[in-house]
Image (cartoon, rainbow, N blue to C red; front, side, top):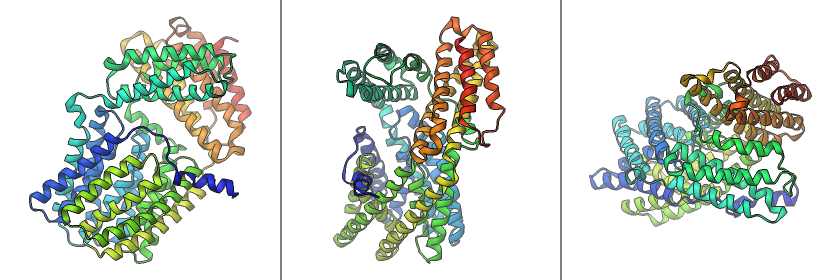
Amino acid sequence: MSRSAAVDFARPVFSFAPGPARRWIALRAALAIALPLTGLSLAGFPPQQAFLAGLGVFAVLYGAGAPVRRRLRTIPGAGAGLLASLGIGIAAADRPFLAVVLMALVATVATFLTYALQIGPPAGFFFALDVGIGNLAASHGADARTILGIAAVGVCSAILVGTSDLWFGAHGVEEAAVSSAEELVETYVAAGDPSAIARSRRAASAALNRAWTAVTDGRSEDHFGGRLQRMHSRYAAAVSRSVGGPDEEVTAELALQEAASARQISLGRPRARWSLRQALRWPSEDLLVAARVLVAGLVAGTVALALDNAHAYWAGAFAVLIVHTGGTRRAQLQRSFQRTIGTAAGLVAFGLVLRLDPGHWALIALVVGLQFVVEMLITRNYAAAVVFLTPLALSISAAVTDMDLSTIVYDRGIDTVIGVGVALVVVVVSGVLGRPELLLRAHARRVVLALDDVLADLAERRTRTPEGMEDHLHHCRQLYVELLASDQVATRTVQDAPAAVAPYREMEQLLAHIGYLVLGATWNPRVRGERERMALARERLGGILDHKVTRTRPAADITAELRSVEAALTGS
C-alpha cells in the first residue's frame, strides 16, 4: 500500500463525516438508561442489579432515526428479542461453549432480520452481547428472574422514552427529512457551476428518497405529502431541462425515471413477509452478511475459549460488530482498524475511570454521559465513538458480573485482537468465495421477478378491480425497492471486484431503465392499457428466468435478452 493510500485509509479516524443531527437520538438514549438506573437505585436495589436494566435499554437504539410510528413497532420488538437473548444465555449457564454457539446463532438471526427489514444498526450486536452477559451473570450466581425482571424494566424505559415524541404529536424526523430535501432540491435547481451540477443532483435525489421514506414510515402524508409532491415535481422538471445540457449524466431515460419515481416512493415499504422471503432467496446479500456473522462469531468465541478467556463472548460479539452491517470490503476493513484504535484508547480511558474510583451515583452519571456522547459520534467518527463506548460497556459489565477489574481490562484487549483478526479473515475469504458478480446477478434476478409481477398485472388487466389494484400497488412497491437494492449491491460489488463485475454493470443498468420504464407506464392510463405490449415484454423476460442464476452466464447474452424486452415495451 502506498503512503497516499495508507493516509486515505486512516483518514476517517481523524476526521468527522457529515451526517444528520443526532442530539435527540442521543438524548433519548441517555434518558432511557438514566431513568431505570436512578429509579432502581432509589428503590434500594444494589448496583450489581440496577445496572442489569442496561441490558434491556439497548432496545432504544433500534430504529432510533426512524419516525416515531415505526419506532412504536421496532423498539418493543427489539426489546422482546433482547429479553429472549438473555433467557438463552441464562439457559446455557456454566456451559461456555454452548453459550458461544448460541450467541453466534442469535446474532445471525438478529442480523438477518434487521438487515432484511431495513432496521439497520446496531443489528445483531446487542443481541449477541445480551446472550454473553446473561450467561456470565447466571454462571456467577445471579438469579434468572432478577436478571430478566430488571432487564424488562430497561425495555419498558426504552419504549417509553424511545417513543416519547408521539405523546407530543411531534413529527421531527419527517420535518427534518423534508426540510433537508427542500434545501438540497433548491440548491440543485439554482446550481450554475457545471462541475457541481451532477453532485448536487445526486444529493437532491437521495434526500428526496429519504424524505418520502420518512413520511410514509411516519404515516404523515397529510402533513407533508403536498410539500413533497410539489418539491419532487420541481426536481423532476429541473432534471428534464438538463437533458443535453452540462450535466452529462442526465439522459431522456433518467428524466423519465425521476419523473416516475415520486409516485413509487410514496407507496411506502413493502410487506415484511415479502421482504423476508426475498432475503431468504439464495444468493442474496442478506444471507451473505448473516453467514459472515455466524462464522465470525462462532470462530472468535471458540478461539477465546481455547485461550481460557473468562469473557470469551466479547471476542465473538466484537467480530459480529465488524461484519454485521455489510458494505464493501474496504468499509469493513476500515471498521476493523477504527475498532482497534478506538478500543485501545477506550481501555486507557477506562483505566483512568478506575483510578478515580467513582461512587455509585457518579458511575450512573458517567454511564449516562458516555451513552449520550457515543450516540452523538457513532455516525460521524466511529473510532471516536468506540473510545467512549469501551468504558461504557466495561462499566456496565463490571457492575453486572462483579468480576476483577484488571481481568476485565486484560480480557477486553485480548478479545478485541481476536475478534478483529477473525473478522478480517472472514471478510477476505467470503469476498473471494462469495463471487461478487454472482451477487450482482442474483439481485438483478430479484428485479426481474418483481418486474414479472408488475407486467403480469398489466398484461392480464388485473388493475380493473379494487383488490387487483391493491395487489398491483404492492407489486410496484416491491419492484421499486428491488431496483434500489440492486443498484446498491452493484455499486458495492464493482468496488470489491471491478474486473469480474464490470461486464454485468451495463446489464444491471439496462434492467434498471426497463424497471423504471414499466413503473412510469403504470401511472399512464393509455400505456397501461396496452395489454399486448406488456404481454410480449413479459414473454421475452421469461427467457431470462429460464436460466438458473447460480450458473455462470455471459453478460452479453443477458443484455441482448433485455434489449428485446426494451424493444417490446417501446415498440421499436
